[in-house]
Image (cartoon, rainbow, N blue to C red; front, side, top):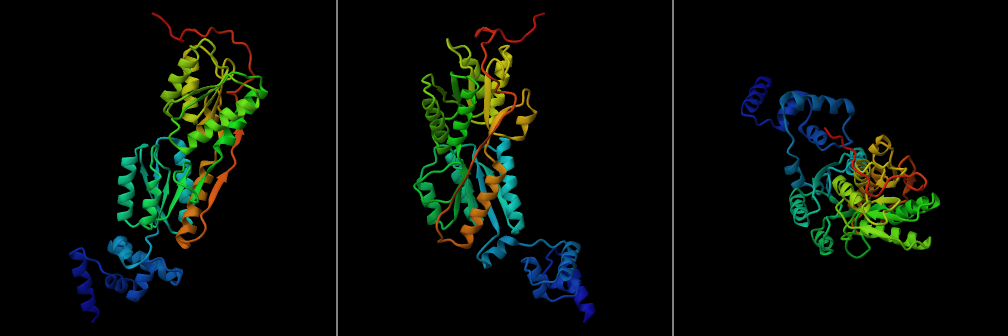
Length: 363
């Protein structure tokens, strides 16, 4: 009989169709025990689990989780849709998501919408096909509110992250962007700045609107009427181009607040190109406080928006929603914190002309 089992197992290995019975015979356990191990059941003793896993590896068995999902109610997967995967903010945020999911034996599928609603829609449809248990969605710019209703019709739980569309109540995790910009304006005014500009955003989503509201409200609180708000993309290049345009105006700003840190890095490069010194001739404040801020030259003052913590909170919200689909909707909004560094010095009259020449050498 043992010889028959060995022959059957050898035949299965030759044709590539390793079965649960093959694994059970190899590990010396029952087929049901192998099934429990594959489903990550806590009912299996650790020593037995390790023995079965060793047999799975030795036989080259690949678990068809998609087929198993068709037999069960959950896939233990979450879809994550962001709009700018190149921004280090999202690297930190996804790390926070995965830290929570890993503890619950969940994994995430990450996609980048590039702020395209059409691209975003394709990703969501594909995730639905793969039967993810929930979606963490940073809505692309221009996303219609009806999208959230569509996800509800699909019975696909959705937690909106950083940005939000549609009418509340909805599940959401983010930070208080309005308060963060208020902190930046208040700090600059306390240093003596009166001509403060804001760079970035197109006002097509909630996160930009909140930043602008914070800027205009804080400037009004201080009785400052010289407001300057540039609508731009959210890249280093956009920050670079914007600062060049601003510093060529008849009354250039003495300080700028940027929509994100990438723009702030670009703005500091632009100031250097003009022969100006960031933090001395013009103060610069970014938003997000990514790791690079402390390493830039000069070190960038930034509004910390806690991307890792936002990711953690978003993942927890999703897991709670999966466990309780009909529970009350939740919003988790973290408090920002201004991290003061070298790029926002006190206002002083610049010794440089607004038409200062770029730092170039001639042959």
